[in-house]
Length: 234
Figure 1 (spheres, rainbow, N blue to C red):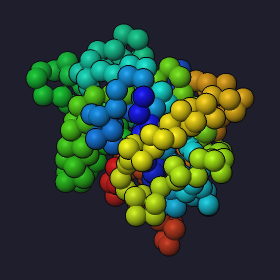
Figure 2: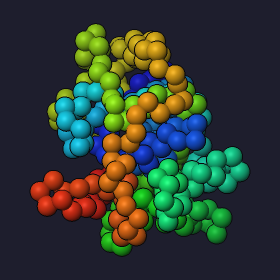
Figure 3: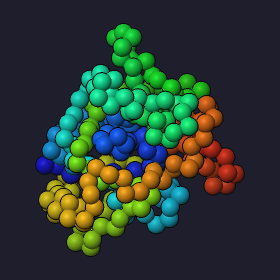
Figure 4: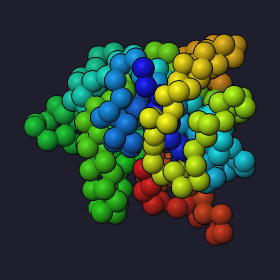
């Protein structure tokens, strides 16, 4: 069992997507999606870019990988078993909008990007999103996860070595975590939280609107001019 960790810079509800009784990582973080295997754990720390202050060393979510499939298989799976993971970008229901099954493989060999968090008027941004998403090849699926969102939790001092160095906020790691992997799983499984439920809401949930030009899994307010910042930062 490996323990992957990274900084979840923009907790929008799309990556990871913790809704509909499955936590899925289907877009962004391509290396983790390629590398992690069934039985591994993935967890995300908070970010200094979050609207919530002082959560950089807090756990936003953790998932045990219980299944892994290609993006094509995920599209087929969602059509039958989890249709709400397919985004409905015009919906007023937040959970429908941030669906992460954003690539339609039914129309030919090349996937078609659905109207979704990674659809963008700026073609370069959309192409960059697509490259990262498809480069991850696989989707990580969990039926054993904890999602804290805007109510992230502190690590105990015994697990302080898992905290990310300040210069690692854009990457991921697993090898330095291995000494503490079993202790992390024991700790999070014994906190008293019911697995497979939301114990908080995505930190950026309130920043979504129905404006069609606001796309990206990280729509966020620019803190200087209060405008939506549509940059892609997977």
